[in-house]
Length: 235
Image (tube, rainbow, N blue to C red; front, side):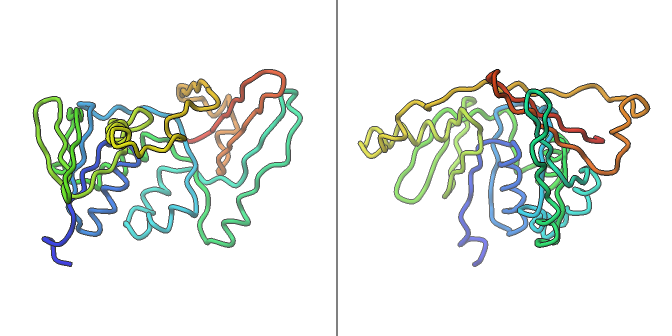
């Protein structure tokens, strides 16, 4: 396809999902714009694991070596009961042998920073809070709270749990009477998730940090209605 034949993609949200999609579109030379309501990038979030499902794509994007530098290799997830009696560990090494890629722990801010470097500055707009979305037969238009108007062919909601894109789509579907009943029901459960990071730990005191392999521990609640996960990383 020529550039004129390619759709323009409007991405709402500059979190990991929005930036990753933007980086893929950049690689494919497909036009896109990213809109982020925050005015600056904040280094928030804990750690996550990334493995064979994504690393081949990172290699195609040319960021595999950079990712390995910021990540820490891991082989197991260890889980315990409240009494600290261990469950059988989850061993990732068979997956690595099958797929050819290992499993790594990485902090979300550093992964976000890696993706952000792949996006040309002119293609991401900060301080753009989407107020409304409208569609016609072949175009989609968004209005931002600063009275900005942007038109594209496809809109992607990568704006989190309280997505303005999803809210707008649901309102339009509900007005037409075609929103499924299951999408109008409350969730059958609720939970509260607390996420945080420690200050940099002294490896001479916490010697486990010196190990070349990262650690992921989980304590699963039995009597008490909570679970706790600890990720030890070098970042």
